Image (cartoon, rainbow, N blue to C red; front, side):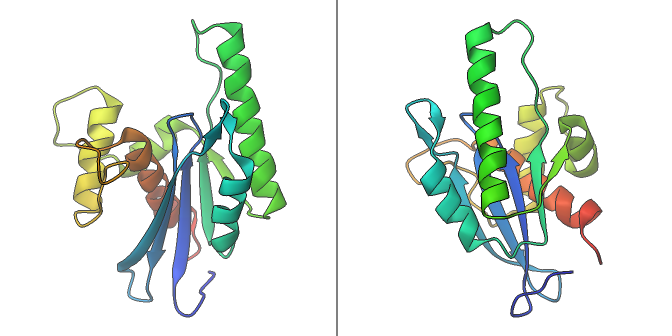
Length: 171
């Protein structure tokens, strides 16, 4: 268990172009006492390495970092799949450079651990937003203060960080 001044940090990363990086900070009583967020920085269609590196460097003392283990999307063009793969590889390289040890977790795995029932929808985005609202009632789920709707990339990354805390962290 990594505690820095009594606090534990957990990172969740949704690696898509519309993804997010979420850092959840808990105190010794297991209460959420802070958070930090970064929309996945993109520069000319690629992961913005410097901005992401600087953000992750601030949080390299995290206990667990969960990255969604994503693959090529069936039916997408070769060009878009290649770009997506390049961006995911860039993200992994930045995490290695910081260095932050990370766990690749399949979407169905982390979703089964933290997405709540009680909502009648098969759409995982809707269920993710609902679950994040229940788990984190005081957190702003929007991408920015100008946004009007919750952002599914942000909620997914928050839930991945929660999954890391619940299932991967040492007690």
